[in-house]
Image (tube, rainbow, N blue to C red; front, side, top):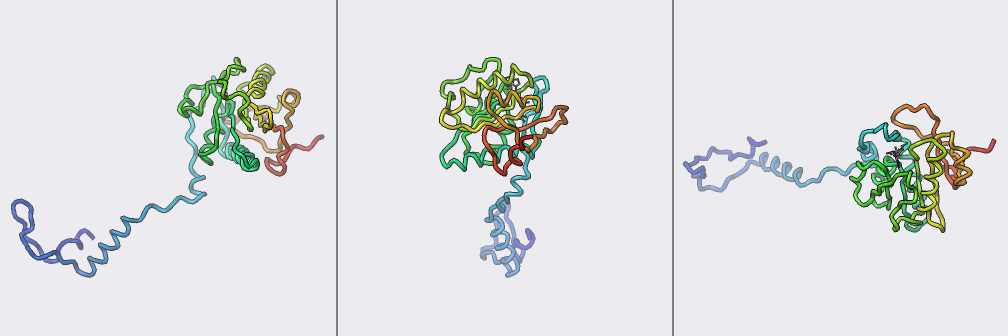
Length: 241
Ligand SMILES: C[S@@+](CC[C@H](N)C(=O)[O-])C[C@H]1O[C@@H](n2cnc3c(N)ncnc32)[C@H](O)[C@@H]1O
């Protein structure tokens, strides 16, 4: 087409590169049509992404550091839990704040699916400082060391403690009760099946049928416990035996 856009009779050019031909340039009808097509293509913005194309994009996460007991959820798990949290936000009809304790993948997926969600990540790994004021440094060994403005400020709290010990769950439970809104708070705990009885005693949680999965194969069986009946979501609560 470049060829077509030139004058259809060869112009003469002086030493300054100026066209010495005084006649206005004339385009053939074929060249004109090609030019119009070219210009209209230039004016078109790229086609918007479909929801499916957007969902295809993976969330970029930092690499796992196993010394910090970091095992990231696989995409299906991260999306399932994020959608559950977002459906709790929608169901309430009023704005809800979400605390993500030691579950950075969930934070990242929440923000990807709904950038407007008010989510706070409490994490030990300083690399997540990349999330700016949404990041709060948190060490479960100091369960009550929390900024004042976060205390009793969350209607949804999700936690994935780094260890499967009694001590770790007890300390994280202390943090959860300090973060939870006293009026109403939905709790989601992702941890090993081995914590089932403690999760019930400390926080009144029950396991869902849905099984969290990780990008690396883990030896332990993982569960998602909630303090509310999820209905048909998350496969429902596991029936009592
Ligand atoms: C089992 S992983 C849970 C991550 C989750 N599966 C995800 O994909 O987002 C435990 C998390 O605890 C964090 N962690 C490690 N040591 C911690 C500490 N002393 N206090 C609080 N969090 C800690 C790790 O950085 C990691 O993100």
